[in-house]
Image (cartoon, rainbow, N blue to C red; front, side):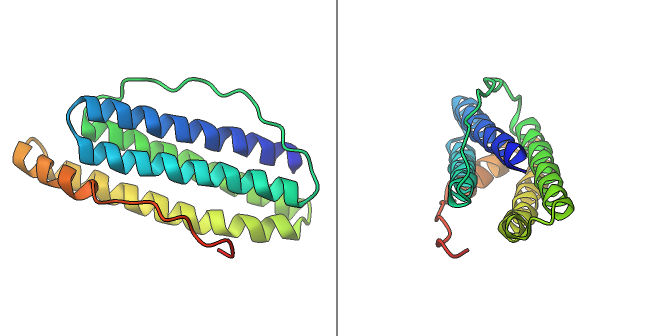
Length: 165
């Protein structure tokens, strides 16, 4: 379980870097609101890997930080970018589910309780990403509507959950 939790830290750190790279890419295209939305994703992923980090420490175990690969720097159009966001969130969900299965197999009840927060979080992550992706698909090639959506997405903020969540 410990090795898998440390691997998840690595994956969450990569996710943070991936979203920051996506933010830089999309802002370079002139979409500051979408860039902010992706930057908030970066902040959330940073919060997630720190949550795993703190959990491992709280169990009296050693955190082992592993090297992460550099993310790509080009993600295509906003539509292509948000398709990649959804695909990545689905990978994150699969990883969390794998962790939960290991915790169940090892009768690690504390880890099961800890991971339930992430299971709920992933439902929310996939839903919010799907919502943005669906809007971009509906807009199509209408630049005015895309700029309106960009403005809307720029209002997103990250408020870390309280420590008891």
